[in-house]
Length: 292
Image (cartoon, rainbow, N blue to C red):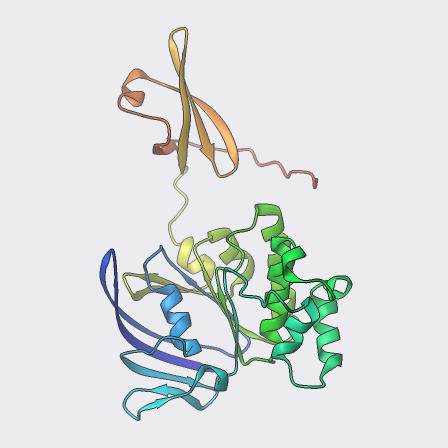
C-alpha cells in the first residue's frame, strides 16, 4: 500500500498553483493521474520519485517512509524502489539496448535482462544503439529499463503521448501485460481518456492541484446519464459554399467530417477554430470495424 499526502507551491508562467494531494494506492493496482496540463500531475510523480522536494506531507510505501516533512526524512531517488519512464525516453545513447536495460538491473543478473528483452520484444534488437531505433522501440527499451530494478512502484509520465494511435495501442497492450505479469503497482500520468479506460483500475482526477474525483474510470467519467445527445469537439479545417449551403470540413479525432451549416453558424468562424458539434435525439448505429 502506498500512502501519499503532498503539499507543494508551484510557480510557472501561468501563475501559482498550490498543490495538495492526499491518496492511498493499493498494492498491484494500476492508477492514472488524469487532468489538464498544469493540474500538477507530473509534479506529483516527481515528488514520489524524489526528484522534487515537497513543501510538506509524507510518502509511505509498504510501511517504509520515503518522505516525511515533520520528521525530516527524505530518501534519495536511488534509494526509492521505483522505475520511472519519461516521455522523452532518457536512454543512454552510447549504450546498446541490452546495456541500457542491464544498467538498471542487479549485477550479473543476465537471466533477468534476457527475460525482460523477451517480454518487451527487444531480443533481436539488443545489440543496437538507441539512435537506430524507432520511437516505439525506444519506449520499449525505456519500459524494460524501468522494471529492471524490480520496482515496488512504476511511474509513467505520459510515455506514449508522442506515438501515433496504432503504435500507442500496441504499446498499451505491452504495458498492461508487464503490469499484470510482473505484479507491479503502476502510477500513470495521462490526459487520454481512451488510454485511461484501457489501462486503469482507478483514476485520480486532478484539477487545480487537488484531487477532485477518484474511482474507477466508469465512476469518474460516465456518471452522467445518457441524454440522447451527441456532443463532440472538432477543429475547423475548411469552410466553403456550394450553391445555397455552406459546407464545413471538421477534424474529429483522426477523422474528417463534413457538415452543412447556416450563415449564422459560420459567421465569424475561421479555419483552425475549435467548435462543439451537437445533435439532439441522436440514435446512432454502431458497426464494428474490421481489423486492418
